[in-house]
Length: 314
Image 1 (cartoon, rainbow, N blue to C red):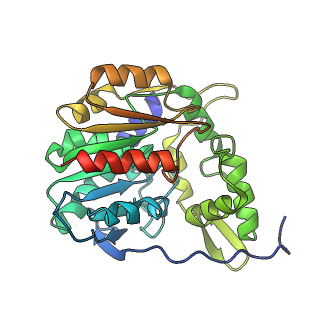
Image 2 (cartoon, one colour):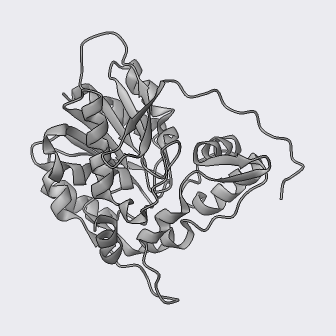
């Protein structure tokens, strides 16, 4: 992602409609970014018991806090407060008129502002893809905030293959008329990476990642302008890979880590995960079978690995 990362820093109309899922648990909260945007988070209270550090959940590029509506209640039930964020331009957070602000350094500042407003001085972070990049970035800007981290299918190097695939669809998805059609479109983009999902789970996936703009018009729940982080390339040319080793090194020093990788991921290669393990021997590691970029974290093995990690974390 060399040039990308530099820019990031500097027909189913008549089909019956599936029933809407129950509203996610947790309390809706808003806070204001350092530059004045209204941003959204969902706050899950921890169960009674010994006080533990809270958990901050950060989603991927085109996703939002609903990605964690399965995981967050499970973490909260184990005794930790959970904050799941909508980064600017996603979900219920405001879109930014200055698209150059869609970059990890600004996102990290937003996260720090929320934690300050919430009175949180230290937390465990769970970051999927872009959320992991934000976590690593925050470790260089506000290392005091991070007590440990779960990186979901992201690491010290980002493969050109995966970046090229993402650049091929982000901001380019056509509207859908029904939730069934939205699920079909979501599956067309993500089905190869997530072959384990059932038809019902694809409906859930769509409802987490799409929104109803108007009756009969559903769209992915993000600002299409986030695609501008990807520089246009001539036909047949691939996006360059990205070297994030300095960020990963900053995160890994003296912190507990868990790396979750989809076994067929095209963004985080197995060899990169091996080198990360060698550089951070304290890091736990899970590969999710028959899964690409990125595991949903609803997989039983992912859920167990995260809860076990949090049992031993501060």
